[in-house]
Amino acid sequence: MQNQNLPLLSTHRENYKVPKGEERVVHYKIERVLFDPKDGVTRVSHPDLIKTDVKMFDEVKRNLELQGYTVEILFHPDGKYSNVVIPGDPRAEVVEKDAEIAALRAEIARMKAENAPSKEEAKEEKPTEKEEAKAEAAPAKKGGRPKKGEE
Image (cartoon, rainbow, N blue to C red; front, side, top):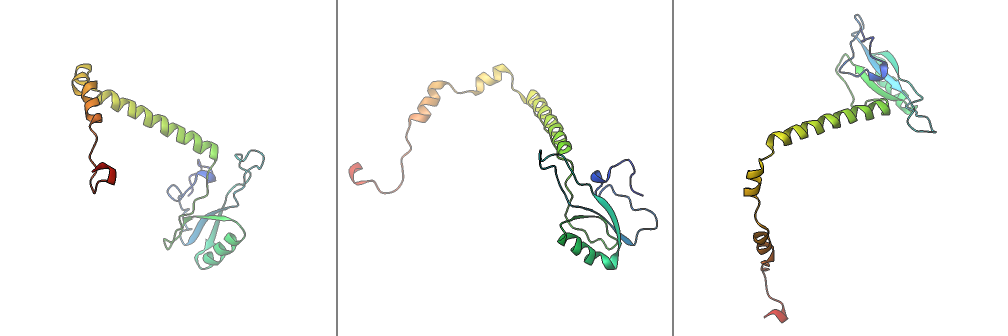
């Protein structure tokens, strides 16, 4: 049975549970994804869960796609799946990505703190400014034939 705690928008192939006795039909979500034209973020449409016989599914899917629906297959008894995923709520995705970024930044800060060399080691590793200037001042010779004026 479908996880009743998850809204249909958050239900995907990985977390969908097939109800007992419905293992020989195709389960899929359809939606004509529409957002509010004023702000472009508020979702106006909602997905619907549809179950169709395997023999009819290919024709039904084609007709739905011709009408502008996005079809996300949750379960197919023969294992035929497509990579189509109905997009979720943009605000929730932004919050999710922000949390991931914050976690990665914390991880980077922790790794920098562990690998930071002591002040004495840092002074020994840095070359002096004079050595750097000498290294930059020496022009590299170009290969090939010299120009007429340079002979």
